[in-house]
Image (tube, rainbow, N blue to C red):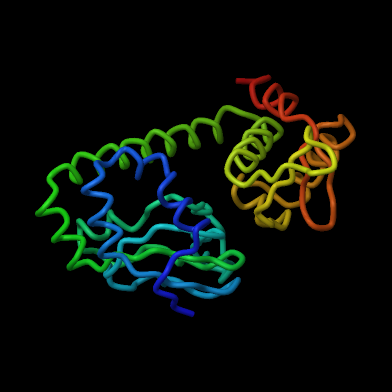
Length: 239
């Protein structure tokens, strides 16, 4: 599945990443010069819990599903890494083994930098240390925000916030009606429920309520957002 060349769309996804664009041109050049491409089919294992930290990774297409396995043996999805996002750098610094499994969600392309090359880039570009500190700070802020939402917001508001995020990251305008946006990331309701720490049944109930209110439309292929402003209002109603 390896292909040494990114497509135009994949390269654009990497180059337009918020964090990556903040780096100097010379640093971006050296990262891309050392990187190699891997392609996966839906459900393929990208990295397993316990693997050595041998690669720094960016998602260029599709999504990377990060999960853990409960004591019961059930897999629980923690997050989806979207195109343009880099991950795996924490393990590169502390040397500990991977703490979670990573799977391709849909046809997925990743860009990898070997640990030896990662260390060489750090030596050549002190700028990368500060940039990675900013990246970690952003992740910590996001994590604290999720914990706060989980403890202070009802499921309805958290679901609306998640849908707004998915529209922002994976929204595909409806050609027939420009006011509608399809969420391109295909998530089963069970997977959406796992992201919210709720049951599938409760998420299904809230989705049907939002559909009756005209905010979304539930289709066999996924969710279509009809009124993004309405979702934003729902997410802020109990904040």
